[in-house]
Image 1 (cartoon, rainbow, N blue to C red):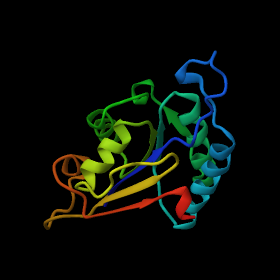
Image 2 (cartoon, rainbow, N blue to C red; image 1 turned 135 degrees about the horizontal axis):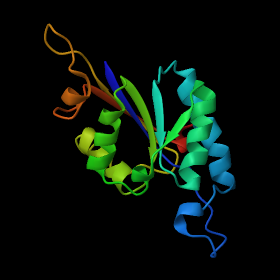
Image 3 (cartoon, helix red, strand yellow; image 1 turned 90 degrees about the vertical axis):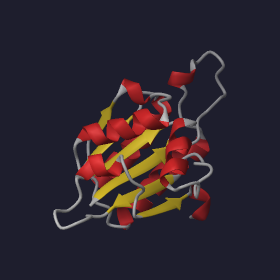
Length: 164
């Protein structure tokens, strides 16, 4: 099975106009939601091989909570900052692991979630977690990420902080 877990960074703080977009931290709601959603994912028994994150402060901080909950080191990639849906999927595939969790930004993350859910996901709220799974096909099994890039996932789900 190949699995992609998309996480939109938690709610950020706009209170300091001197900060550039990349350096904005999480606000109080984001600081509460990130560990809650990370623990919720960990409680499902999710087996994640790699966590990839944008270099933006709000994304890295969100990813760190998921890394702590899942016992994994977060890998940061500057190309994930404001990346398109195509770039996000290509980066997940290039990671070369069966299950990749990726923390990134809108509009790319919503665009990818919408594409992979065939329009079922129309918006990724802050700190939302979307899971997409591709199961083995044929007798030889799934061809991993190459297959994931060429067909729709077999299953998908969306969890939001408000659904807690």
